[in-house]
Image 1: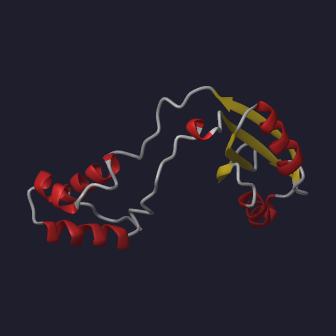
Image 2: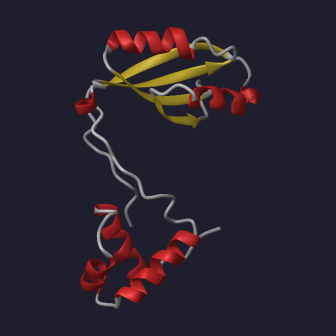
Length: 151
């Protein structure tokens, strides 16, 4: 179901995308409506499911996780998808998992301290999941774009 956003809603979202911690009063000042109206609209947008969550973005490299990798996971049976996801959730290095079309059953993003740590995660954690037949790994050299969809 599509949720209708008017131009004011879109302005509010643009400010929240730039800084999710922005004060309602500041958004109201930029948009030209009352703080109460902004608060009500944000509530409506949240109830409509447009805003999934407000999150904190960490710098993984500064925390010692220098290697970002994407892993294409080949599965024996895609029908066990939910069980496999539950097992991947227990691997702390895994930060995203996507159920995909194409060669891979899953496409996983993870962070490790270095390449040796990456090999350990692949061989001792991911490949130990019974339904995983093999993996293909891509190491990210840089992330020049990371943003939400714009409108």
